[in-house]
Image 1 (tube, protein in one colour):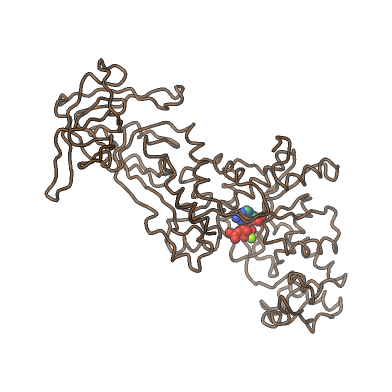
Image 2 (cartoon, protein in one colour):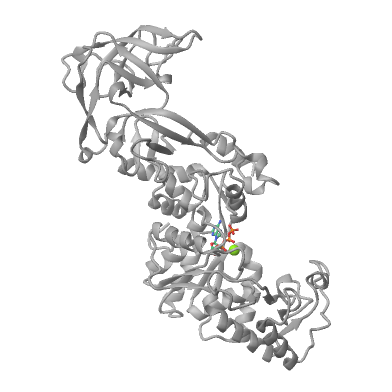
Length: 557
Ligand code: ATP
Ligand code: MG
């Protein structure tokens, strides 16, 4: 692709509209409903809406689409604002709510009634459903469809005044009960709900429906391109119908793109809410959650999320993207920015029998092998060390180049050691290795040029920092948990393992992401960690152990 070519079909439309002079400035909006936390799918919409406007010198509104009181809350509003800001976007003074427009929406509804384009229906919800018809049969007109303008205006005013109970009347657009598009069969535009609103308080007891409120809010804000997901394609004729009827000053254009779905992740707020409510996860920001809050707490950098959706691309084709692709972006970002440290997750003690009892040496360790600007640090080395249990094998195959009885290995930034004796407990488990070190082999300064094939990491026992380390895995066993009848049946019971790890002492000061050499990227948990009881989260492993499995699973899609 040529560099000057627009990256996707939406950018092509937008650049063409600027080129032709149809618009002098691009105005977009990101319109979440504050009924839950934002998830990885929303990242795509945020990056698209804020991205195209920023690229073209335009503007973006953060609009809270709050037409459903009861399900919405200020907690979600705050979380949404924080998430968008953290992702690197700025709405400046353009924070709005659909509820900011309740007066204008009411007036627009009155205009529709005056034009004979809306009527108050007094059928019950059940009866309205029965009149709607099916995909193959037309609907039938409500007996109230031909009420006079005066009667409709009077009833609608009294609906607003609180004279009727929930469900007694609804205001409907008067379009076409025989339309092949079900959305045009006289859709409801206002309903009665005696329930307070998270932003408007108890000022209203009638609330506009999404389709009515959304397009008009777009028009009120002067949105040029209203970008939404494909499930709204069938609603576009209705979106346009309201604009045709009301002729607002600005006419927005709705364009649909496909949802971003990520394998092994759920992207429905309702189901994510169930995970939280049922205590399956610790909260909306549990690091296993595909929410922005969860991914942030886990340690995913915002740049990695932006890069992920850039690589996924904006298209019209449904997609289920491998979780591995997201993790690759996280690794790519952290690889350059995270300093290296040493930590032992499943410790096995090594005693260097020929190392002086009370001696401590300080080994110079590089903070980043690929970038000398990260500098070095000193790691204490002493007679008793922790190594990783699986860096030792008693009955090792010939190609095992780590530690085995009689075998040698290099301790990174330290000495070459040999395993002389294996100590076991009564149960026959290996609990300690007696080793000897070769004093001539100290890294950097040693006089010996002896080489061994394996190098392993270690931490000095007397200096080690005890920490609880949380190893996260996929929350689901099934590549497409969104499609499962009951997501409970595909939960991965082993999505969290907690180990008592030994860390090099400099990790007491860790901020942000670090790489534990040979193990992965980790970070201090921002909520549960303390100086006395450090807690680290694994952000991502160094290699993608799921790649094969995931490919196979997705091929079946
Ligand atoms: P959910 O089903 O999780 O409640 P939603 O679409 O109802 O999602 P909204 O708060 O209405 O959530 O979404 C705000 C915006 O984000 C909408 O424009 C919507 O189209 C977009 N969006 C939501 N989910 C995705 C997704 N998976 N991929 C891309 N865009 C999305
Ligand atoms: Mg929605």
